[in-house]
Amino acid sequence: MHTREWLALLRPGDYLVIIAAIGATLLAGMTLWSSDQPTTAVVRAAGQEVARLPLDRPANFTVRGPLGLTHVEIQPGRARVASDPGPRQYCVKQGWLTRSGAAAICAPNEVTLQLEGRRAAYDSMSY
Amino acid sequence: MVEPSAPRLIRSDASDHRVARYAAAAIVLSVAEAAIPTPLPGVKPGLANIVVLLVLLRHGWSEAAWVALLRVFATSLLLGQLFAPGFFLSLAGTFATLALLAAIVHLPRRWFGPVSLSVLAAFAHIGGQMLLARVWLVPHAGLWALWPVFSATATFFGIVNGLITARLQANPQHTNSESDEKTPA
Image (cartoon, rainbow over all chains, first blue to last red; front, side):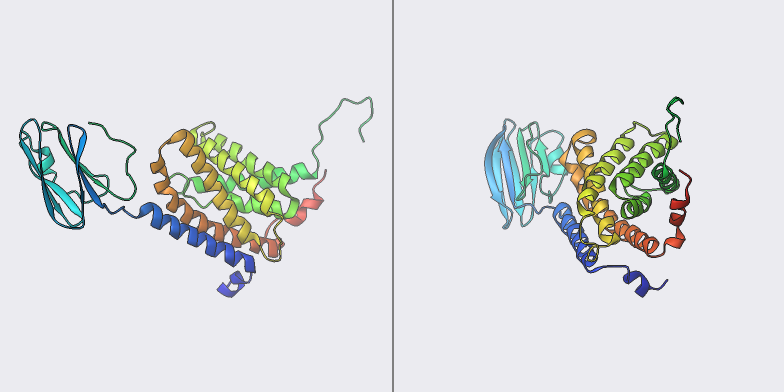
């Protein structure tokens, strides 16, 4: 059976349904799979928000915790903990955060750095 | 003729025989496609839907509902999945499909053929499955990340199954439908 014979089985409304189905699939793919670009870096110390930095320009921010100073570095689209007085340096070794919802947690110094997009990736986080 | 004094017998009529035969065909297709490896439960051709659509178009919604539900139960029983999560997902999808088909079977046939019914039914099926999975199996919004995959599957196999259904409708000699009326009651 040739393509034309198969196409002859389609009625006008069928094309509409097929186009709608493909459109719905593409739309769902774009909205559900687009990795949300982060727009803001949020710095918290002891659970309290101390800074909300836009990710569209470079910036540096320093926050004091129980152990000392934690330095946060912002570049367009990404942020990192540049230095931290914590003993194990987990949040520093994590490097650049690029995804919305990503967080670096400097637990000993009670400082967290988290990226936020237009939509919140998580309902809530507690440390 | 049943004598008034004779013991009451449950007699099967032509419709019962039809339902049994179509359901058997649907079960065979379901069991066969269960052998196809799939990356995600739910991503499968759904060939049994061809049978359900044919019954819907030829004999109406209630016989189609019988075939669809018998198919779900018998296939799960054969595959050892009865009352397993997959069975309930299948059942939820089938209920959603039948509910939608009850409505869209009244669409004007001139404009909306088997392909429309098939694609819309496929979407109803994944919709019913996803809703049950969301509220019961995986109560987390992250489940919707799978939706585009199911949506693409429903679109593709909806079209393919619809075309096959349309072809079988156009050429009934390819199926045993003409023997329906000859079935002894």
